[in-house]
Amino acid sequence: MMIKPKIKIATTSLAGCFGCHMSFLDMDERLVSLLERVEFDRSPFTDIKHCGPCDIGLIEGGVCNAENVHVLREFRANCKTLVAVGACAINGGVPAMRNFFDLQDCLQEVYLTGTGVMNPQIPGDIELPLLLDKVYPISEVVRIDYFLPGCPPSADAFLQLLQPLLAGHKPVIAKSQLHYD
Ligand code: SF4
Image (cartoon, rainbow, N blue to C red; front, side):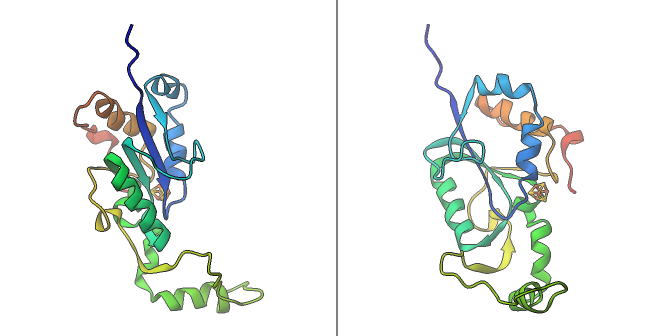
């Protein structure tokens, strides 16, 4: 009997809160049958640090710093299908609220003059990724194949996306599962 190779999925959180990843895990016992058909490459589920060749990449969060740009480009280069998962990836979401303000003003408020600040100092370690002037939707940095809206998308929405993709078909998400929170 021929054993079908498993579909490889990579996931990452850029400027996100991991809530979309938590929602993915809400599949609960349905994860067991999913895992019979897929294996995870780079993901918080595996702790693999770089994305290798994959069938599907799921991206949570927008792009707020230079490292996010690097990770996103690595996913685009290695994933046949790339999906923007959740409001933050699609339009910047809550982190993009800083776009209404100048970046230097944000840093000053958070690290120097804001309520409760102790030892005021703006972090400047060379190891820290450089912040971008704004938080960007991921589609402004790389080409995206599918968008799964919601904050977060439900576990059912993830399944409605993945099941057709695993079978090589175009996913159609039920209207009831599409939320534009
Ligand atoms: Fe978190 Fe919502 Fe953004 Fe997902 S879309 S990363 S749940 S804030």
